Figure (cartoon, rainbow, N blue to C red):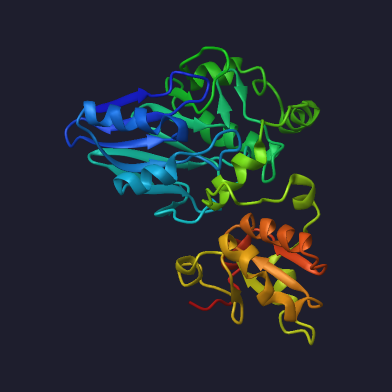
Length: 346
C-alpha cells in the first residue's frame, strides 16, 4: 500500500510517498523553510526518509534537499543534467526509484528546465513544473525550451492512462489534483495547439521574474549556502561566452590552447564523468579566495567547466568581474563532453 501526502498546504507543493509495510518514504521537491514540518510528519508516522527527489533545479524557493540529505542521511536523486553537486544518484528516463516496496518510474520531461523529470507511481504522476493543473510551467529560464516542453507533455505525460492523477509542484488556484485525461482535453495552454502554436504562445507571455531569483537559484545550483557568497547577477551571467564540447575539443591542441578551469568538487572531478586532461581544479566555493592562482594566466584563454555548464557560467562571470577578459564556459559541461565521447581522465 502506498501512502501519499502533500505536506506544504500552499501554492508550492511537496509530496511524500511512503511504503506502508516497510515504513520507508520518499519526499519530492522539499522547501527549505518547511524542513521541521517534514521531520515532524516523518516522526509522527514513524517513517524513515530513504530518498529525496528534486524534480528540477528550482528558481523560486530554496530547496530543502541538501539539508534533509545531511540531517537524515537520505539519498538525493536528480536527473543526470542537474547541476548541483552532492547528488547521490543521477537518473535517466525509464529508470525506477525504489523506496521499500514502492516503485516510481522516472520520465525525463525537459522544457521548464533541462533537468526536469516527472515521477509515475501507482496511478499518479508528479509533474514538477512542466505540467500544471490547467497550465504549464514557464520555459523562459536558462535551459528552458518551449518546444521540448510541448514534446514532454504530449509525447510522455499525455501517453499515460487518462485516469492518472496529476500532482504538480505548484498550483496558484487552490487545485489539489487533476487527471491526464482532463489536462489533455481542457488545459488552455496546450489542448488543441500544435507545437508551433505552443511555442508562439509561450514566447508571447510576459512572466515576471521570481523575487530574489539569483539569491535562490544559484545556491540551488551550486549547493553553496553562505550569506557571504557573492554571486554574479543575470547581466553578468549573460555576458559569458559559450563553447560547445566540439569547439572546445578542437582548440585543446592549438598552440594557444586554453587553460581548462574545472570548478566542481574533488569527488566529481575524479568521479563518473571524469575530467579533461590537464585541467586545473578550483571548486566554485573556493574560486574567489583562490583567484590569485590564476594571475599567471590572465592573458590566456580560460574555459570554465562543471557538470552541466551552470556552476561554470557563474565561475566565468566571477572571473570577468575580476578583470579576466578571455573567459569562456563549456556549454552543457562534462555531461555533454561525455555524451560526445570525448576523452577524459579519472
